Length: 167
Length: 215
Image (cartoon, rainbow over all chains, first blue to last red):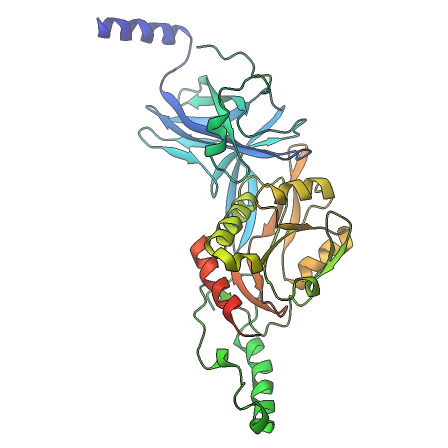
């Protein structure tokens, strides 16, 4: 029964045209901003069963979302856009402070702790096929604390226009 | 020297000169100062950051706070200053540094009242007084953001040998910048540089020593 369901699911996913369900995104979060702050970062963990590459990000929050890498060179912090992040099979690739992040720029509004930001992550498989993975990333405080966000998770009323999230 | 970088932090030579002078004057005024001669020279401090005591830079800071007041290092006498240069649109190093600074203040306990954290923006174009005020307050209400115009920002960075550069990305730009944390003692002298990779415990340990020195 279970394997039948799995095969059905597999067929459905294959029909969708990409190697879906092979990439997973965990613990995504966005750093809060203060009013008029125009940029912030999103962080998360990526895993894939097959070779994949994060090649882009889109979000209703802003039209400008780039994949960046931070490097410390002789005590100088440098951030650069990278064309993609490789996600080798079986490994967890972390986007976290001190390494990679998704840079969200040209923000038109403040991003507040407790809100949720929809992110669409675009992955490319070894075969060149693309797959979109949608996540709802909670906003943590500027200091990166998750705690305050939890208390307000239920709000919604004062939240972002969190565009429809369907599964 | 643990630092092998392009910023040419002062070597032992830069430290030696003022000390030699001090030793000389000590000898001349031996009787008068015998009992008071700096204890900190006999018991070598074990700092976890880079000891910059005697550095011939980082002596002045002349910038404006978000309320429009002109601020210099003299304003913070009696407190240890933890100084960091950054910009608010930085998603990684700057919030990490300020969150750590808040943790350091907590670790210092009551002594934390004698810590002044200063965040100098290297992006005054986008970091308006309002953004700067809200940004530092998000970490701790006592933290102070300072800014200047392009020229004064450059002067402040130069005084602390801080490198920064605008780097285009997409339609926007980001900033490369030195991510060292400077410690200025309660007498207004540059004493230490802590690296970004160091922990809040490292910072607190050094600051405790700086705050315990007798004035």
